[in-house]
Image 1 (cartoon, rainbow, N blue to C red):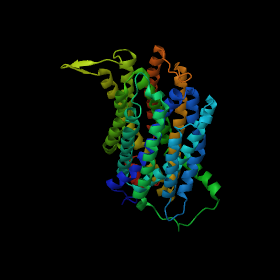
Image 2: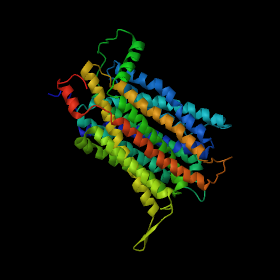
Image 3: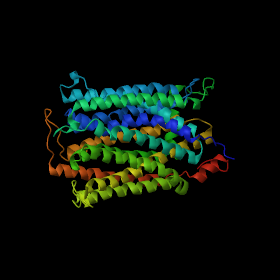
Length: 486
């Protein structure tokens, strides 16, 4: 009865998810450390740093939909996806190293550093677009059953967090251990070593995912072209149809909102570890690692939640958990109930009470996000299938690109907001290479905006996803021909 029963094995899901390791190392490394590098090491004003990293949204607003259209309409014996994944992935790996190596002629002024960051970020995002849009569309095509899509996206999220834990989280120990009284985040050589290591690993993951998923390619070299309008007009007609489709509308709104909150928190939490909690290096790795563990466990739990509560119910549960985690952090640490250096003596052993409580609720915030992200991606695959069942058109790349663009726009917007937040709370950057001491008020404000804004934005995202219309039952009815639309 099911007209789209194609699925893939767990092993295939694992090999597909290797590509997410490449995406994770690049993007989580930048989200976690770029603001630190350009402000605390190079002395760039936080507002300029946030703006430089966010300007790519205007470029991605063009390149991501175009990449989706190009990939959907590629005629090649290598398939629609793999040629772009390989070339784009290797470009992404190269630029992910160069972004940490600012040449001497750009260092003479704030604007020199600013424009280098802008240019390199645009090149990196171009490679990311070429890799990620076809990669996401390939996942939509590999797994066609309703629950299998949730499993695939959940496993992909687990791999993202595994790479994030092994890379950016452990970077605090491997690359930023610190020497004496010097904050290791002010030493430029540490970022160079980290960037080179991550870039080499990224290139390896790109090659591996292209190799292991090559059997899933569809030879399109002999696929006839049905265009009556030409490439340019077809592109705009496709984008118009996707944006006019009511089914993904609330998923787009949700992913934009929830990603904005996540990136603001992820950008500011590094400063929270360094300044608000004043963690030593190994405490930072534990705290930062807890975010990856939390998200990975959330992705794992999301698979069973979608079975029991369907996809929209699973997202609402994840959002409630995230909000609770950040509210608890605010209640414990902003009020002074728990001091950042609080300890607890148990049986003659002194335990770092502040670290333990911080990790529990910090991980809870990311646990909820770990539920929401893979499930919302699976929702987009369902939407794309509905379009295919209704029209016969393969538009996985188009829907992937608009979904990804909503995330990228949120990222760019929130990076600007993160820069504004740091400037607005009175956070000081190093002057002439000399470290500065933050005021107690600036440090308290840092905790306030990180914990409270994250919870508030997550709540807004749940208001949007409540209106998402597709359920398992509705999709099965369309597949079986009992209804023509939702």
